Every structure is written in C-alpha cells, then in structure tokens.
View 1 (cartoon, one colour):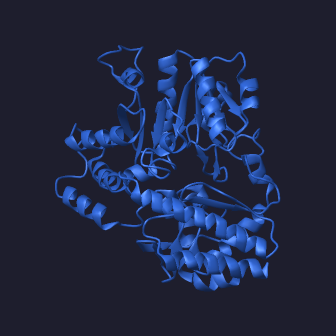
View 2 (view 1 turned 60 degrees about the vertical axis):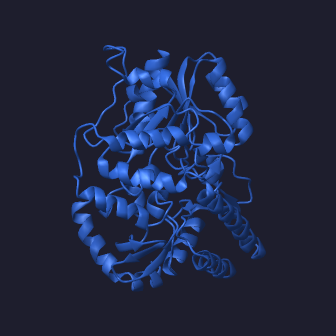
Length: 428
C-alpha cells in the first residue's frame, strides 16, 4: 500500500470500511473506487477538493468532467439559490425548460428540438430508440472503447478484450442488434456494415473512458457520408464533449453534422442531466399527438427538466455561449498536452498524450494511440501508479481516467501538475 497516501487519509480509510457494509465496493459507482481505497471529499470549491482529513487537491476529474466552470461557480449558485425559493420539482410544464431548450437550439448546429433526461445513459437510450422509430430499422452500431452509459443495447465492447461481456445479466437478446465497430478505421467500418440495415451509428467524438482519443476529422466525415448513403442516423454522444470542445460541441469543432446529439454533464451546471436533440423532422417522432402508438417513440421521466437543473444549465450555457472561455481552455489544454509529453520524454519514458480541446490523457506506451485497443496495450499499472502519486501530492485524477480543465484552474494549479509530474518522471 502506498505509505504516504495511507498516512494522509486515515479518516477516509475508516469511512471506506463503514461504506463497504452498505455500498457494494464501498462506492456509489464502480469507477470511483481505486486502490487502496478512495479518499472521501468533505467539500469542494473552485478548482479544489478537500477531503475529510483536510487534504487539498487540485481537481482535474471535475465531477466526471462535468464541472467546466469548477465547483460552485458564483453565477450558477446565485441563480440556483433564487430558484430554490420557488420550488425544486414541479412535475408540470414550466418556462425554464423552454428557455434551456431554446439556448441549446441556439448553440448547437442541427438542433431544432430538444428533450431532457436525468442522465447521459437515459439520453443515449432514448436517442437510440428514436433512431429505430424514425428509420424503421433495428440494428445499431457503436465503437470499441465507446462508453454510452449502462443501457443494455449499448453496454458492449467498452473494455478490452471486447468480446467479454461488460456485465453479468446482459442477455443475448438485448445485444443481438448491436454491431461493434473499430474506431478511426473507416474501411473496416464499411466492411462490417456491408449488407446490414442500421438505424444509427453512435460515436463519442472523443473517446472518454476509452482513453481520451479524438476521432480523426476525415474519419467523422467518412462516417457522415456512409450514413447519408445508407439512410442511417449519425448520433454524436457528446455527454463529455458537449459545450466543451466548442459552444456548439463536436459538430462545430470538427465541422461534421450529426443527426442526433446527446448531452449530459456540463449541460446540468453541476446537477444531474441528460438531453438529446436534433432536427424537427426526427424529434417530432416523440410527439404522441402527431404519431399514435405504436408509431411514436416514447420518452419520459419523473425528474425530466427539473427546474433546479434547468436553472443551473442555463446559467452555465450563457457563460459559455460566446466561446471565449472555451477557447482559453482549449489553448491551455494544448499547452498541457505538449508540456506533459516533454516532461516524460526528457526523462526517457515512453509516453503518448491523447485528448483534444480541454481534455488530456497519458498512456505509457511507444505505440501511437488511435483506438481503444492501443490504450489497453499500454502500461495501465504504470498509469495508475502515476495518478496515485499525483493524488498523494495533492493533484487529483481518477486513476487511469482522462483529465479535464475548468475555468477555475489557476496558473499555480497547472504548474503544480507539471512539477509533480516532473518529480514522478525523474524517480521512475
């Protein structure tokens, strides 16, 4: 066990022992567990997390990359406090849902109509179902290393080796219509989909859990053309990239149009959210007043368009709308990727740095990392060790996951990332 970590996080160890009795693995989401045990956060502010032992961490995980403005940004908090006095959950139609939908339509290319959900998983599930309703086809396709949440039909081919089921309890029936595709390899995609009737192809424009790997622009363009020729919908899962790559997300950033776009994380302004959007012609399939059962595609949920989330989301998007904050973060991301590469190379360590805009990831390997297979061939143990060393020294990455930037990160925060990485690289 890393001695330094254990000596600094005694209260967290006690809490984890207690948690294990009532939470499987002692956590509320499997990925939040890391060896030897996770620290427990007591509070968060700006770019920092503070644990129950009083340790401070510069946070590059940012609530699963959701907090692009950092923890509790004042403008968002003000708006939420105001709304709290008016009620937290209505269960009826309200004006805030119209305002946030209008804001999304204004910012996102190809979005004419929007529906809100409570998570990215739900948004992906409903978007896939809508693609089937609209095209009348059953098959869907996703990419190796692509993570679209826990929905059965998409919960396959996430981790290497891709032929092992991602979870117990997934039936053949739930997955029989899902085709797995190789990332950044158009030729192979076309080969695997030859003679298949596919409702939609879903892709993360930057693989998140799959290693922070951007889709190559030509690859996305080729996918778009393939979808046009085969009457297949192209779905961008922008739960991570939405409102981060650019105000209009990946469609704007890469100049490639999607038929449906899925959002989450940043859209909620720090509260639970998901959404899917697209042209009116497709989205109207959700309208039961236009399409009687069984022609319409169902979507719903108790907490959909929750007024607190809508308020926080609107305040967040207003700050991101003109693109200046995002551009600054993108430049900083570029600088971080370059500098990390230099630090490791100057210390003779084989490294690949992936990511795009304000997302970055490190892989201990000589091989160029263009797909999720290369990510898993890299030295994962070494990556976990690097991240735990950073955590011991007050810099938080969720071990083996990509880092993200927020507008609350200071020059000191970034310098600390560099100096701690330098120390690690020198001694390993």
